[in-house]
Amino acid sequence: MRAADGVLGVGKFVRFGAAGAEALPVVGGQGPPLKDGDGGGDGGGLGKEPGQPAMGGDEGDREVREGLARAFQVFDARHLLPHRGRAGGLCESIRGRAGQGGFRSGRVSGHVILRSVALLFPPEVDMALLPDITAFYDAGDEAGRLVSGRTIGTVELVRTQGLLRAHLPPLPASVLDVGGGPGVHARWLTDSGYRVLVVDPVERHVQQARRQGLAAVVGDARYLEQVDLSFDAVLMLGPLYHLPDRTGRARAWREARRVVKPGGLVAAAALNRYAKLLDLHSPGALDIAVTGLRVRRDGPTTYYHDPSELCAEARQAGLGDPAVYGLHGPAYEALKAEERRTGTKDLGAKALETALAAARFADGHPELVVSSLHLLAVARRPRTP
Image (cartoon, rainbow, N blue to C red; front, side, top):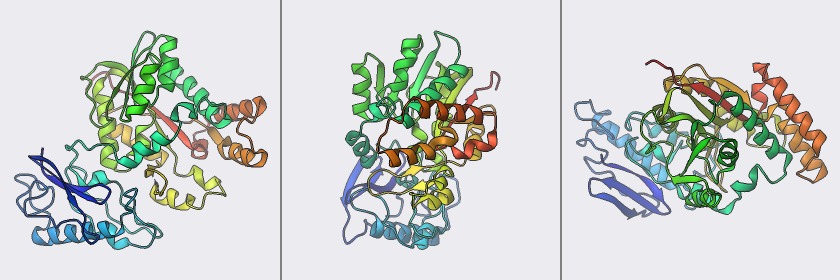
């Protein structure tokens, strides 16, 4: 494993090297300085590959050190999320190469945006799920989110079922449910006759799925252990939300393509960055629309796609032209408003049928996809290379 340094724990600076991971304390708001050679190069640049030019030599190292120092100064000690405030310098300083992905730079007013701790590591390094994501799901009820009787959850479930049934291969096809959580979708797929394996990074979810009699293993969408060309369909109905780094999302897409058979289906859910603009109670809606990121103190950073970006990611992974659907359709914010007005989550059969009818109508009008918070992209691996 190539050496790489980064922030990976509360008050800790973790150095990854050939001997393993070494946790060092953060002192005075900063981590230890990067030593020559850290990052897999020979002191000439972070993430330098053998035979590649260094990232600006000493100047590149100086900029990376300064950027990391600023990152340590502003990182929230609890969730590893940046504090609010203007800090375009942080975004501008952390730049250069880190494996294939590189750092993304830019000035964003109102927030310090560090795309992901994964940016600090080469993509080859298998990084554990961040503690805030695990805590977020351990504290919540993902198993009940879609089946609790809340109308919004029911719309998402019914729409997902309908669209997948329209695109999945015939029974008894094999389905890899990546990021399948506690197995809500795997349950109805299995009951329908599909052979399903759930892969999820949260141990609690895996145990919940197994208690239902489902096949489930702990795993990461970016580093699937399944062999090439082994499934008729691959679902990613959650991972893309939690991969704010473009490199991580690209890797997840490529892994899905790798394990699906030629002609097989890859279906991926995403959040739509523009839908929140319809929510008058969301003060961060404009930031999400501009950056695609929701940086919050009560949970993990969430990534929101531009619908065209979702299509581009599928194509770049080597899949065919995708179709993108709005799972909730145009009625999502209207349902939320009705929840606030009535004080109830179950809005009744009429509201449910109206929302479903609007979503199905929008399927024939691509211009309406931007009104749906949840998106579903479906694409196929070409039968020939």
